[in-house]
Length: 328
Image (cartoon, rainbow, N blue to C red; front, side, top):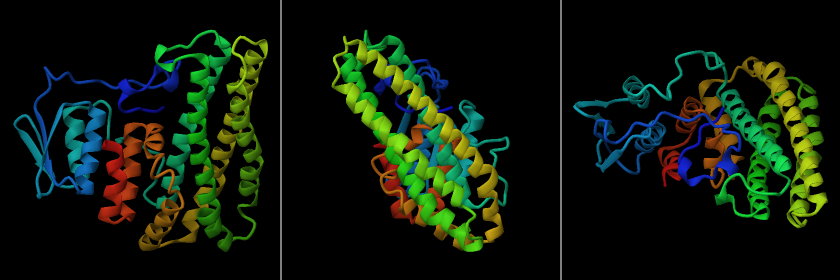
């Protein structure tokens, strides 16, 4: 799971020491047809299509205009809805898919907020698995050397590891706060005590999550040649695995037992959009400086689904501002 954009800017050791990320098919500039996109640079739909084209790794010529977006590939061109353009792209270049043709796990009646929360879970799962694999790799090497020279010294790699974990921690804490203030609140209004166990689970995991952050800080000041350094890395690896197991169980329980009940709340489409916007507003860090981090944990079609939710509940200007962060 997971698909990073701009792979060349990322260190192999930092992103996936074990080749965890699925690679995408790159179309060489010498064999690909000329790709041109016409549209307003301030339009959220234009930015949405530019983002989608990043996954296809095509050489794009963007031509700013004031018209509705038009995509040209060789002698073929298309204009219309964002979904029409994505399907056109998938037909031309099938890998990776931007529009899922199989079951995504969402039914037609799945509330919008449930879709958003489940997609958050998928990104968090990917990042947690990445941290676990990276932690295992650090413990195996024991500070002897880095996997990738771009990581620098073992101490430098620990700092990068700590930064990545801090980003994940901020994302997870905002997500938990959003669930408690909006999703669980709505369900509690319908049935008091319904989400008590899920809220308690959040509280139990918080000390583990903060403890891992302190462990990383402690490792960062140890001498890499000290036997305690490797022992500390092994302990860190074990605690990360434990956190992953707890989170996996928690996500599964929410998705199986709690979220299906949101359909019984019977919110109208307009109410669903307002609730979704409330949730997004509570995740300001995730939707600003952590937005690329969030997107990195998605498969291409998951990323496009998430952007669809943003476009559906945000105004043109606000949605455009969020999407611009990806392609800047």
